[in-house]
Length: 200
Image 1 (cartoon, one colour):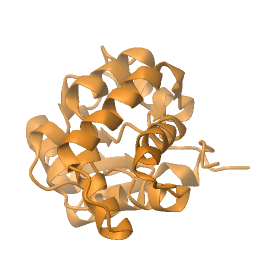
Image 2 (cartoon, rainbow, N blue to C red):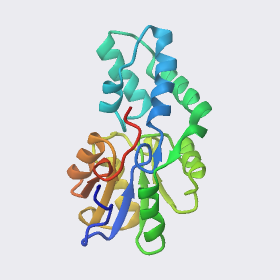
Image 3 (spheres, helix red, strand yellow):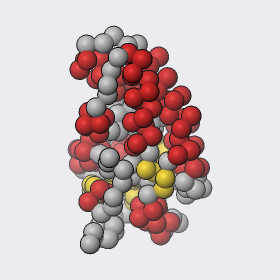
Image 4 (cartoon, one colour):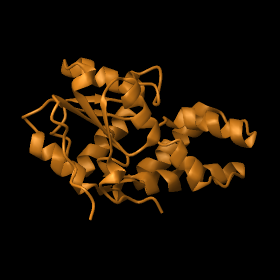
């Protein structure tokens, strides 16, 4: 029996990652990467995909180039991957234990989304899972210079909510996101300790 997902008694604001935390999108992202990368002769391994979870597509392509010795143009290939993902993103599923937390504290605590994805698709994801009206603050890859594991994404969420980072609880599915939350001095909660999501 898994523990119940709850907030910390010290928490004054909630920050949620999106992919793999609010929406079960990981399998869709993975297939999108595989479909694009096979054109370059790359069999993208699931383990590497999970290790890079939370990093924007352009930065992921840079890492893949370094690993496989390829010379893909990061912006072009990253854009192609996002287009492929958008084509399939209707297949994502809501992660209900986390969404229930959002609905429970909506209007009671400040809340924000801090994602490594791009803003337009992030809002589209929230629409698909029925949360587009629950958040006013969404910090995306378009808004930051340093992606996770750097804490900039979450620190900007805290700043826009007007809450000190030490009172912000971050909900994440990826180790890079957990590292970002901890480096930002926040309360970090790994949602995979509480729920099952598609990890193959």
